[in-house]
Image 1 (spheres, rainbow, N blue to C red):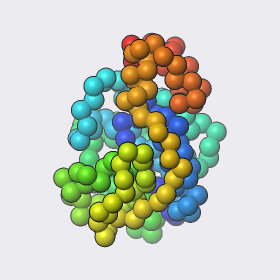
Image 2: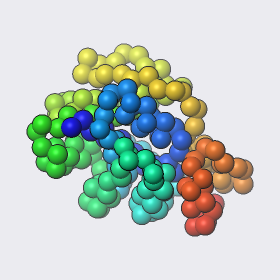
Image 3: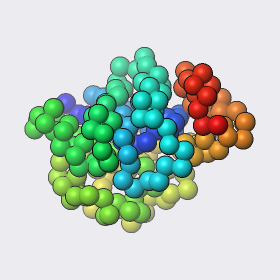
Length: 189
């Protein structure tokens, strides 16, 4: 089994995340991609904290209807700072030694990759995949890292939160069910 693991705050999940998952699934010939929302991200200061429950619910709404995409509650259930190595060890335990794990991240992560907890163990447990992201060139890629080229979509959770705060539309930047969830729960005001 070939399993992609896509972690993040997903604050909120948007079409860029979904395109990344879909194209990585196809190009890497994955059986599935699992979205793993963080409980508390170790490398990112969250300027608009949102409950893990809300972020998870939006991920579930976003991937609904796509059998190749799943959501995991592992990091949220841990109720502690989320480290990729711990998540990968759990997925290795769940799926066994025969499964091939693909840890997928954006090129924005390359700049501080070697500050990650136990990064060399991450490389041993999984294939480490970096996807291009607008504004973050894929360069100086370590030998342990593979790259995948996806359709570049210039969208970010930060921009979506800013738009919402300014009362601007986010239609088509997030799936419609996610947009409706944000409206119904009065998020990001």
